[in-house]
Image 1: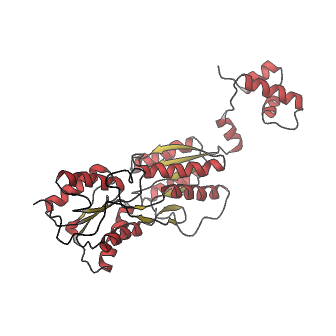
Image 2 (image 1 turned 135 degrees about the horizontal axis):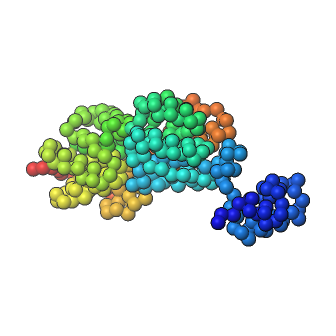
Image 3 (image 1 turned 60 degrees about the vertical axis):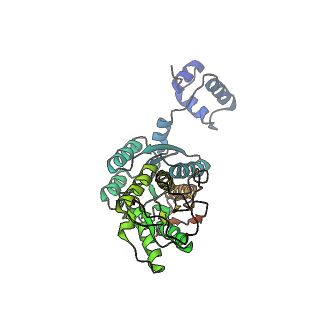
Length: 345
């Protein structure tokens, strides 16, 4: 049977109010009574009712986190950053997955609102123009921050990577190595991040006076099977390319594995860049050249902005962008003098 303040009061022959105040170390209760109550509570393994306490104080000291998926270490890094920052202010976190879909996101918001979380940190991905999501959050009167994606109408409440720089930086690195026929897997274009990174890729080509070739561009996903599918599509198109800008580190790994099956070597035949600097990207062979998005810093900054809202601080006038950097490893090298890869022939 669960130990309650009422059962403690009955055993000690005290009023319920006296026991409740003694457990909170209230100075109106004399020292000896407080010691008696607290000693019995410890002996009986009493734990306070957090929900009831939250109803009295309107504060639960919990934050809700809604991620797209836990399939990649980028998300794990973001969550680690959130939890680390939250714990410094004695907040606990409840984690949910939306599986990158709008309707599950709404259900998770409703669920966390029922749990009376003090604030929400949400990965929006493909809901850039979804006014219903903002209306839902406003109806619940819950402070919120979006991470790794922009949402129209939520300026100042979004934290993410500089996606244009990610696409541009990876492409510029390959151009500097002498590559001109550079393929790109943008990621799914319904996601705002993928669209902006593609713009960065195109900008880098234009700046280098390289005409973008739409046949070198594919729009797959973020994971290993998507990287393999991107290579298959390029093979079917029979396009010559010596380098590939992948949408993520996992996408790059999938592409490398697919290329190896076709007898092509990375980086000797084709250079590949990833994005995210996932924890295992340096362990893969060849180690991935990638763009570090600083996932933990994104999570930390999202939490800082949310906690500021909880203290009624003004909302910033612009979204917070976390800078990124290129990490050069062994999956990229200088372009060979001879054209190296005409796939599909």
